[in-house]
Amino acid sequence: MNGLLRFFLVNTSALFVVLTAATMANASELTLALANSTCDAMNKVGDMYRARRPVQFSYICKSSGLLAKGLQGGALSADIFVSADREWMDFAIDNGLVERKQATSPWGNSLVVAVPKDSPIQRLEWKDLASGKITTILIGDPSNAPFGRHAKESLESSGLWERVKDRIETRKNIELLADSLATANASTVGILFKSNLTAQLRPLYTVKKSLHKPIRYYMAPLKTSAGKADVADFLKFMQSDAVKQIFLAENFDVSAP
Image (cartoon, rainbow, N blue to C red; front, side, top):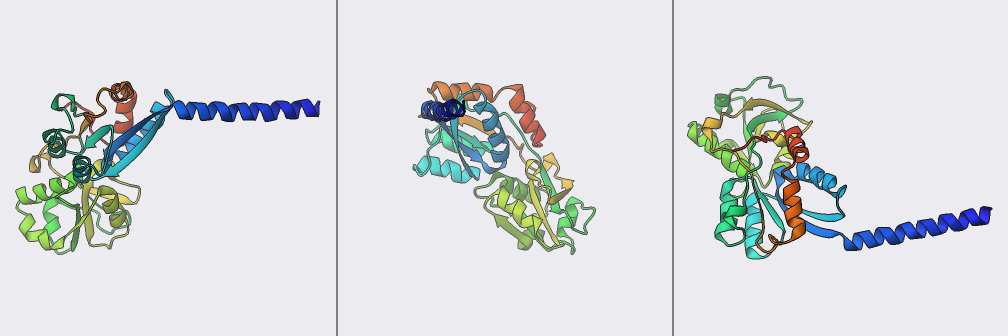
C-alpha cells in the first residue's frame, strides 16, 4: 500500500510539473510600459487578469518621459504604453509609435502637498510653501515626470515659483520622491500624486485644480502590437468594473474626462 501510494504521489507530482511547464510555455507574454504612479495598481490588475488567462507580464516602470523617449529610441520595447499625461502620449503618437484613435484616458489624479508621517507640521496652506518654516520642497523632474511638471506649473501660476525655486529639489520618479520624503527632516514637504501617498506620509493640502492643467492618464497599444489578440483582450479587460475598482481603491479618479 505504501509503495502504491508513493508511486501515485511521485507520478502525480511529475504530471503537475509537466502540465505547469506546458501551461507556462503556451502563456502569452505582454510587456507594459507604465508611468511609475500606475505600477502598483497595474500589478494588481495583472494578478487579476492572470486568474483568467495564462499570461506572463513584464512591467517597465519609469517616468512617462523616459518611457516615451526609450520607446522612440528603441532602448525599450512594449505592447502597451501608459502615460501620466497627454504630452508624452502625443510624443508617442507624433513619432509614429501609437495610433491617435487608439489612445484612451481611463483615469485622473490629484496633486497633494505631503509631509513625513511624524512631521510636527499639522496644518499647511499653499502660500505657506514660501514661509520660513519650509526649507525644502520635493517635486518630480519637470522635464520627464508629469507630476513634477504639474507641481511647477501650480507654483508658477500662483506666483510662488520665483519665491521658492531655491528650495526645490527634484526626483526622477514619484516612488523615489515618496521614499525621500518619508525620511526627510521636519521642514521638508513634497508635492506628489494622491495615488502615491504611502503609510509613511501624511497629506496636508490638496492643490487646487485651477492652478494646473487637468491631470489625465493615457493608455494605448504600440503599433507593433495593436493587432495582437492578446493585447486587444487585455485592453478590453482594462475597461471592466473590476479594474476600475482597483484604481479607485488606489486613489485615482476613475470618472470620464
